[in-house]
Length: 256
Image (cartoon, rainbow, N blue to C red; front, side):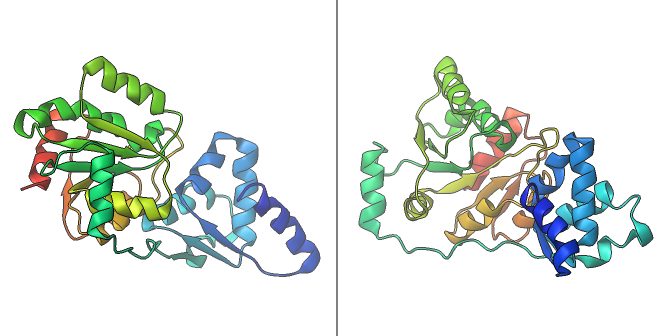
C-alpha cells in the first residue's frame, strides 16, 4: 500500500475514480511501526471502494488496527476475503527428479524433508534444524532440503555446522520450474513460522503448493496459516514449535 497506495489515494481526489486495495499480512502489519504510516494506510483503506484480504486473519487485523476512529466504522463491510491459489502443478518427469537426487548426492531410498521459503527469522527454519538431531535417532537416512535465500541463511548454515547436523542441503533460490522438481523429490514438507513483531504469515501459500504434490505437511498455526493448512489433505500440526521433541515427533509421523 505504500508508496503506490499514497499516490492512488491522492489521485482519487482529482480523478474521482474508485480504487481497490489488495492486502496481505505484511501490507497490514508493517505500517504499524510508524504512527504516520499507520495514519496514511488508514486513510487509503477508508477511501477504497473495495479491499481484498488473503485470509480471514488478515481481514481481522485490518479491522482491529485501522477501523477505530473511522466514520461509521465502515471498514469490515467492504473487505472481501480471497484465498490465494498456488501456481498450477507441473508434472515432473521421473528422470528429472532422479537427476536432482543424484546432484544433491541423496541415496536412493533416503527420505527427503523439504522447506521452501525466504530465509528470514519469521519463517522458523531454525525450529526445524533444532529438531533434526532427535529425528535422526529414529530416521538416520533423512535428508533435509532448504530452498530459498535471505538474511538468515548464514546464521542457519552456522547453526548446522555448530551442531554437526547433516545431511542438510541449502540450495538457494530456484525458478518455479525447478521448485516443482524439489516438490516431486520430497516425501514431506515443513514450515513452522512465528509471529515476529509486526511481521507474520498472512496465509502461507507454500502449504497449498506442497499439497498439490501430495506431500504430508508439518505446520503450525501462526497468523493466517491455519486457514491454508485447513485446505490441505494431510496436515500434522505442531502445538509447540519451540519444543524440538514435539517438532521431531510430528516429522516422524509425517512419514508413517
